[in-house]
Length: 309
Ligand code: ING
Image (cartoon, rainbow, N blue to C red; front, side, top):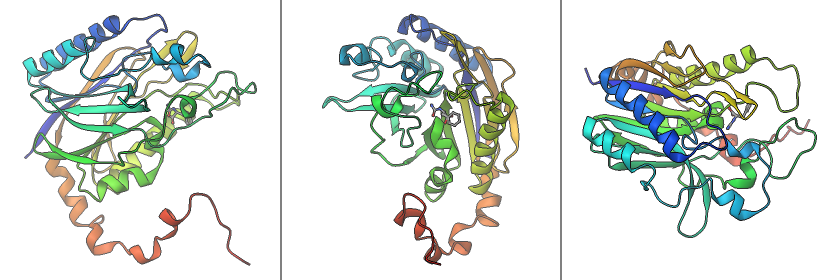
């Protein structure tokens, strides 16, 4: 049995005026709680260090840059890496990355139990828009502030298991799980910042949004016989509600742990990586069952191309 006790460290709202130090203190408190719960790995949300700033329209590049980290670890986050190493807990968290050559990504990192970064992922699927949209009740400007990820969907060996990451909107795209599943992923971790209400003010309820979030992650888990951990940044950020709903999903697609609040909350589950073996050797034995000669459209096309009738 290759058991990894996984903690999903859901975070409540981060206000625009909150400092990195205030946020890291909250992450440290969740890490302390995780140690008490015997966690081996803790997953934090997308953009865990700041408010979800893509909701704000900014034109001045200097105003945008303050949301980004030029290096990782850095002074603000070093205490997190130090304590994770002290506890022997691997961590994953998301942040806004500015590269030395000036590129901007919505990024997440993964460490080993010694606090060393063993993996980095850059969000591929950027929802929303890049210019100010006056029709929206609030903006969603990830396409303005981030470039699409350029690292693909890598999988790493860590804690004696094959694991990968994605971020937020990525979780809605089946290709994301499958590309990692085709690398043997047994655990897929992700953070998200998902508004509770629709920016087009349609009557899309919170219940429907939570259902779609669950549906995306439970399907991805089942169809690739992998654990999936989805961790929210939730609550009211400067008047903009984000939904919670953090979950841990087993390789059969069952939700085995779920957050109950919209605040800082740790959910924990002992995840036996060997539970992936049955699905990977029967229904989803990719080598035995997939017929790739028929899948060409999935990478040949971006949008719909109707058949000639
Ligand atoms: N947020 C949202 C997400 O994919 C969204 C965007 C909200 C899409 C609601 C569809 C419905 O969860 C991010 N940050 O990707």
